[in-house]
Every structure is written in C-alpha cells, then in structure tokens.
Length: 291
Image (cartoon, rainbow, N blue to C red; front, side, top):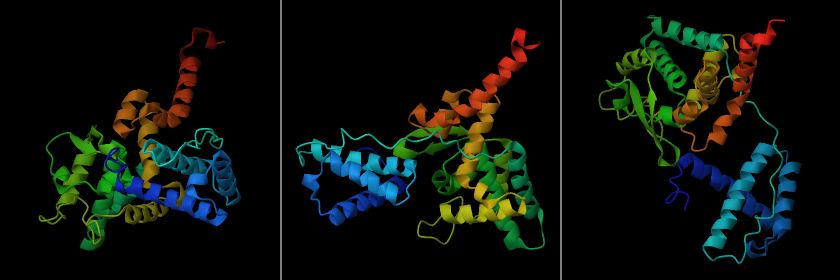
C-alpha cells in the first residue's frame, strides 16, 4: 500500500519495515496475537521502547508506523477495530536542527576546492572535484542526500538554471542552481565516463555513490576544515541551506517548496530562525527602541 498508493521511496519502505518488524517481535515476546492487541498493548509497547532507551522522536516515529499498520488492517476488514486511535504519542521537545554558519560552510568548500586544485595526483583531485560538486549542489539546492547521490548524468550537462527533481512520494519540484554549482558540475562532469547513467557513478549495488560513502567522505573534509565531524553531515548542510535562506529574508512557504516538504509543519522546525529575525527587526526598526 505504501509503495503502490503513496509512492513511498525505498528508504521510507525500509524504515517502515524495520519499525514493523520490531513491533511484531515485541508482540511475539509478549505472547500477544495480532487480533488481541488493544490500546493497553500499544501503551506497553511504548513503555518498552522507553526502557530500551529510544528517544521520544524515535518512539513517535515507531508509533506512527504502528498506527498506519492498524489503520490499514481495519480499513481492509482484517481487524474489527483500530486499537491505536485511543493512544497518544510520547511528548517530544522542540528539537532544533543542527546547522553550520555561513563561515563554516565556506571553510568546508574551501578545503574541498583546495584539494580539487591540487594537481599532484589525478585520482585524489578527481575525488575532490566530486566532493566540491556534491557540496555546491547540496548547499545551493537543499536536496535530500538520497536525491543528490542519485542524480542522472544528464543533470550535470543541463543548460538550464534549475534542476527538475522527483522527490519523496513522487512529488516533483524545481530547484534553482547557483553559478558556483553549475561550474562545479561542469568540472566534475569531465571525469564522469560518457556511458555512465549517473552523475556520481560508483561501484555499488545501485551504480551510484551511496549516502553512507558521501557522509563518510564529508566527515573527512570537516576534519580538515577544523570542524567537529559529528557536527557535519549531508542532512546538516540541507538544514544550513534552509536556515541561511530564512536568515536572509526568504519566505517559509518558498523554503517548503525548495525542500520538497509536503506539509509546512515539517518546515516549521526552522521557525527559531524566524523568531531571531523578528526580534532583530523589532530591535532595529521599532521607533521606541532607541531609548
């Protein structure tokens, strides 16, 4: 149903499968049949997650999967009721996204560009040009890492000033390209074989660079740039893209479209940036603030 009706991607399906396997394993350990599950069972499952040390956000995601499962069973006539209706999720505090400053992003790009300009070895320079391309594209577009690593070779040869992206749930969007990103793609493309279907080909099952390999290489660049590796990941750069746009006056709805969020509530994790901007506007522009 998730794949056929909602167009869920492979990563989403894998996450749901892991969560559902964990829930069914809990029922097996507790000796509870699927048709005997009630609200008390689900509350006990949440308590079990807490004893296992899961964060509230992870437990809430797992409960969302379980809710979807029981709702599906009820809708298909495979269960007489949906026991998840009466169960509330764990309270989640407001978690602010990790972000990098503009100066820190510049340091990352500077280290990668310096390596790309080093002519002492073609192999390392080629990998460095790939990293420059990945970083420039990610910071210019805010793509999800799964969207970025799976870009087709044709994306690097585009004459347009934007990319056409098909994201989660099959939703389509346009993301604009900066001149720096276009130049980085052109430099990287010179090293990509003509017969490659991917912009970032690699020796992997998918045929393109994996998310894990990109994240690992990015942490190495962070270390060279004097940044703590645990503060830097592809998703953190996506956060930086959104936060820096909002800091410079972009509208939240525009950022929602660029990130490919279906619901603006997902984009609202960045409202702390808006809060700070509003405070600054009142401080700098209000006529009574001079005194």
